[in-house]
Length: 241
Image (tube, rainbow, N blue to C red; front, side, top):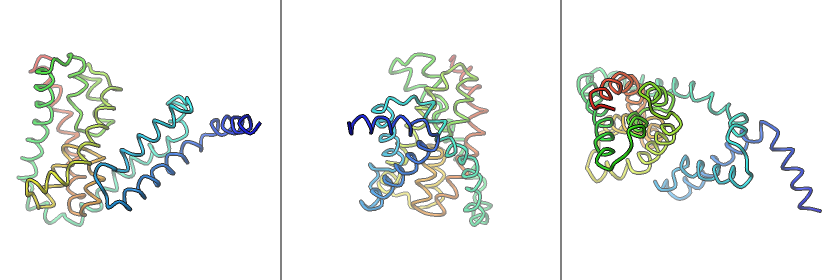
């Protein structure tokens, strides 16, 4: 009887759009709380934990992704304002940015080329199919831009979205320890590297580590989207994709 009542309650709640918005926020708050309590261990990054828990919840409840997105799309809508808000920390470091315009431009171009070429070359060495390579090529830019680039060069936008998220999570998890091991202490350099390699998820991590790193990561994320959108179709033709 109790099990039957619980099932009826779940069916009712599952038809309510706010259920999945609430679930998304609750899961992230829980993951972030655990992350903070355990001293911000990279392997329990709240984005990684939240995605894992939400996917498990959708599988267990047999909820189609579209139904989940219909309820949680308000979070998706806020990605736009959140991205624009990244200009605020950058404004505080505008003076340093003016001093570093040439190095920033060089690092941006080198990072974008490295991300695209290394992906395609390694993929070919490992025998990855052409359509997968097209989907992989723009993996280091933010999801909407990457999906657009992928579609333009004949990749699979849905596969690209998954690869972009994985790239961001890997960057967010490994960045701090990698920089420490390489003895890279300049926060601007750290931020640029994270922003170019790991887009929005990495930028969020950079903001947690240091305000200056977050500012330059936001700048790199935005500019890298533009540079990659221009370079990827050109390199795809040159590489015969």
